[in-house]
Length: 156
Image: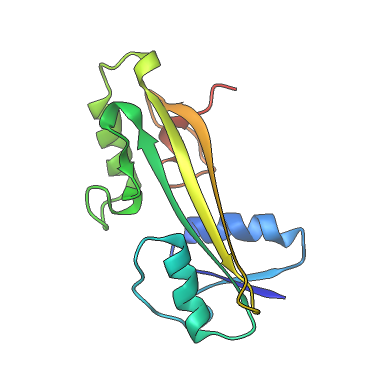
């Protein structure tokens, strides 16, 4: 079984491969599958675009973002393009920390929101949306994540 994951984000590919590796399922990026498309940021639209050009594969796509309540849920669905598509996450994270530097802990609430869409070879479609609640820390920490992970803190 092979799954094509509709992303160009290497961090996401690494995480998805780690999850699926235990199941013995090969997961390839759309680029590795030979698909080069500029696709709108919507999980089902991304999945359908890949499914339209490939046959007999399972297609996964995600749409995720960090919502920060104090910043009116920014960067939200535009997380990857926040402050410009080519702006590094080190710069984005520091910008957010700077915006929240004088904000007390109880107002630093945030959540990661992720929608995963899957299209099976027979055309069946499923969508799941989940969130994880947390808050924005006071500095970047950690070595294992990517994107906004270094500034997102889950108290539990």
